[in-house]
Image 1 (spheres, rainbow, N blue to C red):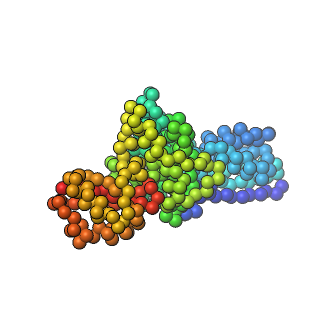
Image 2: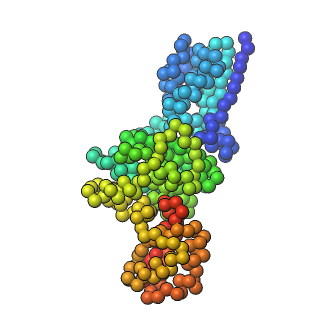
Image 3: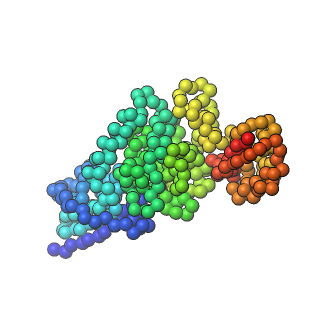
Amino acid sequence: MNAVSRTVAAGIASFAAITGFTASGFATQVTAATTSAPQAVVEQDVAAQKNSFSIQSPLATAETLVNQALSQNPYVHQLLSGVSYRSVGSTTTVTMQWLQTAAQTHQLDQSIKLVESTLLTPGMSAYAKELAIHDWIVQRVTYDTSLTRYTPYDAFQGSAVCQGIAALAYRMFSFAGIPVRFVQGTADGQSHLWNEVEVGGHWYQLDITWDDPVGGSSTKPSYNYYNLTNAQMAVDHTWNAKGLPDATTDFATVIHNLAPSTKDPSILKLSNNVEVMSEYEPKVQLNNLLAAMQSHISLQQHHFVLQVHATQAEVQSTLTQSALGTLRDYSSLSYSCQTSRLPGYQLLQVDVT
């Protein structure tokens, strides 16, 4: 009887093609062949991360059933390295290779539940849960510059690439009851994975990896990529939006409107965060930057924030040592400049003595 075989890579989500990573040493677990191969049975085997199972269906049907099961379980799909099929007659054997074992998945789930039992408290708002999970990941997980750690299990241990970080966030948000999606695309021209979350009835783009960039502080999270609209994220990210909810609500506006009438500490914290609320900071044109800085210094303000309509290079070129020397009434001055959440602007924070 003729046999037909096919091997399929897991896709870009596994980053196998990008990194050259291959999985090996997988034990074989074969489930009994089913007579009808219902979708529910295949979904159960995929969700359990079985290494091998048989289906009483031809190869094409088996592929369809497996692909449908993976689409129904995006988290498990991120753990997949590759899948191969071998068909003999009416029976197809499916062999799946995993970046993260079923045992590691179970251990990670128990660890997440333990962390969230103390991190999240009864009555917490979705805003508070999202903020707590975001900060917990940024403060404890570093980006893996060796490009060898891909899984949420790796991320929980302390280091992973974006795939592991986004998958850990997905699992933690899911357990916390926050609707979440994966977003697959590019950032600065490199393959990248991040999330979308639904909070307060609105969907937002959330890139936790970029809120803890390589070389960034592990104790002071950034919020530059916290709950962005599609338009805000599109400044330096591209992605396939098919099947994803639209992220069109401006988060700063939501927080600005909620803050005056709430006691939620997370909303109040966000309302005082200059990165999140950057669009509410004073806006200046590049040719008025030095005059605006002098105005704040003359008012003896020791710290102030400006939104500068310019590129980062233009701001740096304007704030030369000779230019700063023209300012008066101060003894020392330092500043930091970063890309703003407001497209086309730079967020300039100045400290003056």
